[in-house]
Length: 106
Picture 1 (cartoon, rainbow, N blue to C red):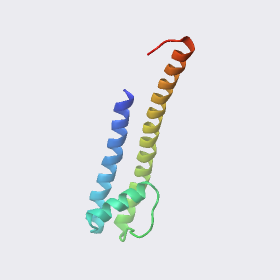
Picture 2 (cartoon, rainbow, N blue to C red):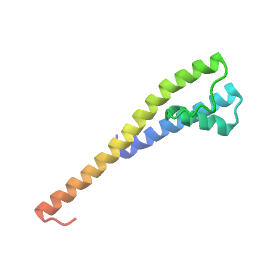
Picture 3 (tube, rainbow, N blue to C red):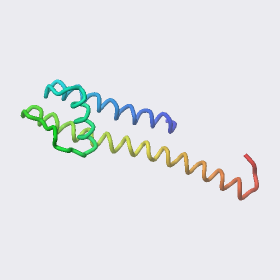
Picture 4 (cartoon, helix red, strand yellow):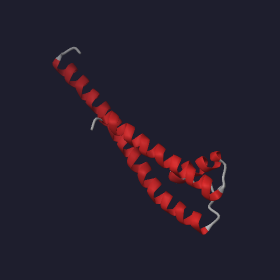
């Protein structure tokens, strides 16, 4: 899979998980769409300001599962994005180094 495709998949997974959380928390807690989105992002980024929090046992269970899954998805997505970008920069750097060492023009 090309680096660009990996980045698109990683961003899509992250976006999908945030949208999923927004929908779930809007429904479970009757929060506004903005509050639900804010909570979803703050939760998976592990910021957790504490201004919004689950109020029922069902919400607490769902949030616990959302955190475990969301943090994992975030870490994997950011790792894929970072390593793909780093690999591209490394390839470009090595190509420029080879060209300068052997006197070749691009």
